[in-house]
Length: 227
Image (cartoon, rainbow, N blue to C red; front, side, top):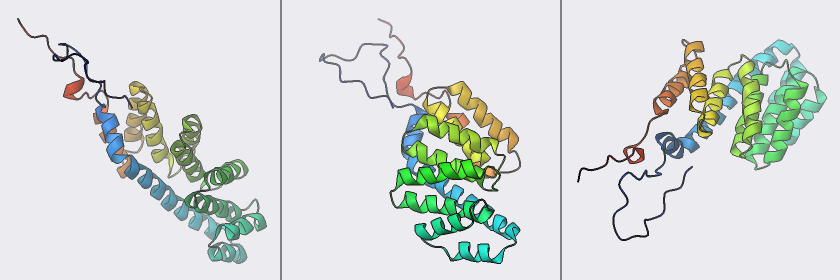
């Protein structure tokens, strides 16, 4: 975010026509809502993962796998399930929840490694889109923006319940990088492709569009006064 200009060293008023470097409307929006957006993103991903995991376990058709997964509560227990049912939906689902527990325990790098293994080993898992979205969210919070972008792009391509949220995050990354037109295209894509679904994410995309190219009065160049 741009820093405010230092005070004019002269005692007189600032020169007419000077442009103030106040935060843009979008930057102010992010400052006010960044924590909420991160929390919303994580909660949405957890809900999506949970729903897909339940559906995936229903399709497994193996009572022992479902029972082992349902019984697990800790990281080591999920790790044991992922090893016992390696290559099966239950094993992949256990890895997702293991990564969430690792992240909540401040073991960020370990959580990322588990997610990277998951998306690599289970490309056909019903929750792979949510796995990529979680990975992108974690990388974004660690300021690894290039890696976050890659993960969000994969989540968007997964055509899953996490796709719209991943697109929204991609648009935000572009907007923060000053690529307004690229961000605009992404937000418009969300609105057009999810016209009748993912309404909450669609609404957020519409709000982002209103902020593009919006300048606060302090950012506008002052009009020269007549002598």
